[in-house]
Image (cartoon, rainbow, N blue to C red; front, side):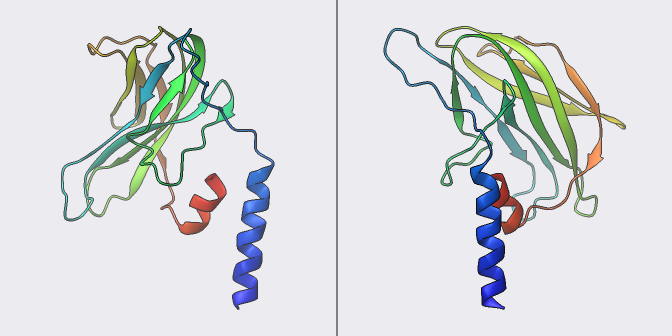
Length: 163
């Protein structure tokens, strides 16, 4: 049994090694990167019965790999100024028995040096919408829309595969 779990763990980590990930720019002092911050909002702190969250899944077609110690809903990703394509993972729980749902959205945005951006999203009966806002709450991207999908709960195996 233990050998099987070790094999599955190694197999999962081997698959991760082949994925090309987004690399945050090294700051040289000449060009100040922008930052993008996801969010998680829970209304019930005892049980997570209400959740509204978003985090960056991909930048310019490269998967974002968050540090193991980071809360990926609050981690500030450094991005060089200019036009970029973003894929956003949106998650919602609207009641204790409703399960997790959401969807991936995609939009382009032009980032300015030194500006802190944050993700925003909303859910209606059939769709998830997301966009990017600047420090003043102004929308700086188009609103991306996708149909709602049920999402599988996260397990240790999906977390290992994602990192």
